[in-house]
Amino acid sequence: MSSLFPALTDGPAGGSPGRPALRFGERALTYGELAAASGAVAGDLKGVRTAAVWATPTLETAVAVTAALLAGVVVVPLNPRSGERELSHILGDSAPDVLLAAPGVPLPDAPAALPRVDVDPARGAGRGSVPDDRERDPEDPALIVYTSGTTGPPKGAVIPRRSIASTLDALADAWRWTDADVLVHGLPLFHVHGLVLGTLGPLRRGGAVRHLGRFTTEGVARELNSGATMLFGVPTMYHRIAEALPAEPDLVRALSGARLLVSGSAALPVHDHERITAATGARVVERYGMTETLMNTSVRVDGETRPGSVGVPLPGVELRLVEEDGTPVTSYDGETVGEIQVRGPNLFTEYLNRPDATAEAFTADGWFRTGDMAVRDPGGDVRIVGRKATDLIKSGGYKIGAGEIENALLEHPGVKEAAVTGEPDADLGERIVAWVVPADPQSPPGLEELAGHVAARLAPHKRPRAVRHLDVLPRNDMGKIMKRALTHG
Ligand code: MCA
Ligand code: AMP
Image (tube, rainbow, N blue to C red; front, side):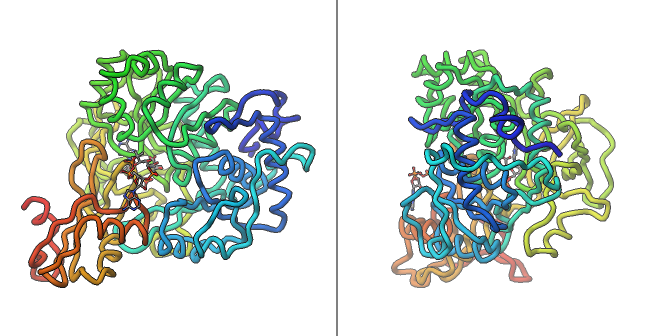
């Protein structure tokens, strides 16, 4: 396999060391500077097999991940807002040798206990040369990204080098993505969307990324109006853009002039598609992926956009719809619903330390069961219509398992029983609702209390946005909580 980042390794800094590579706020690195910084960090990673990265939305994270991947070190990105419970689980499960972070950044106990390697993007000049990753086995693991299931703690999806290369090259084909593109986004760097697509993507193409630090419509407008060509975001971000457009002429101009606007991680409602197109003339392209599969489908720039469609399978990706009994759906009639199954070089290899979960996720002939339900239009376009598991919630583009929040809630002394559901939310797509039977009905724990409790243990994005108190949870004869009765009152 060739290098993951030819622009860094093929010749001295890919032959164009002065080209911009990364920009986070006021701080930026060219390809030459990134090569030097990566060489310096890689020099500190000798003998290291796995490195956790304190994945703040900063230059340090981008340098740390690039350096580790070039050096053949497996990266475990950590959400810096994760609570102790979540961090302990991830670090215990993935057993990293070191932690990569910016110098002096304060850390909670679990990551602070690891040997620390400082990442200083300015330190590189003259120290070490960029590692050559061209001879590495494409099957070698590159990333372990933690993703929630319906029950239990998150599982570590082991993503090999070839998945990253193949998914980014397939997207380059679908989007005509080149080294002339400058991407802007404000996504977190501990998930596939912001890290693989949003950071490694531009670097693999030899183009540039400008990260906003945090998403704002003003930041999007500023960057697209000053040379950025593409925007990546989750539907919540496009919803906020749609809301802001009527009052922000700079934003209208920015989106009108962009080469490509891409939404993913959850469904972008047709209403938001339509509002954005009506105000700017631009269309938003949707692509569909998963932590375990990286990208499966996309609307192509040379294809038609139909709001609500996630496009067609990417080059190299096999996709089929399967009925409940395992029979493949053969008619593209836009009506027959089946579970999406995929096969291809984009897929992960396994869930770390979870052979049971890995075996369950694949069919005997190697198809990955996504759990997403879809139809295919006569032209072959995939249209996602729902999800198999009601216990998975997509909020702000984050996948969140009801079970892990229920377990956290049950650890609160004021909670006797708990059930968690997702409810439609115009901004977040779905919002997390906690149904709680209080231990003491006279003083039931309120929203602020329980949101703080969950945020501190797991992560702020997993906190409930509403709490509803009940005398008893509705259960069936087997004692199983009937969540449909909760949501459909
Ligand atoms: C509020 N906050 C709290 C609490 N309440 N902190 C601690 N305890 C509390 N009780 C804080 C939050 O941490 C945050 O801090 C601030 O208050 C606002 O929180 P929130 O309302 O949650 O944030 P938001 O601004 O509304 O977030 C919307 C968002 C975000 C920016 C769209 O949801 C987001 O970044 N989503 C992206 C998810 C993503 O990348 N998914 C990709 C995975 P502060 O403001 O300081 O931060 S899917 C994937 O990778 C697949 C492959 C795919 O297909 O893409
Ligand atoms: P994650 O596990 O966080 O990687 O989330 C993957 C899930 O996000 C998929 O299984 C889908 O349910 C959802 N998803 C990603 N992109 C889209 C999209 N464009 N439309 C609808 N759902 C999506």
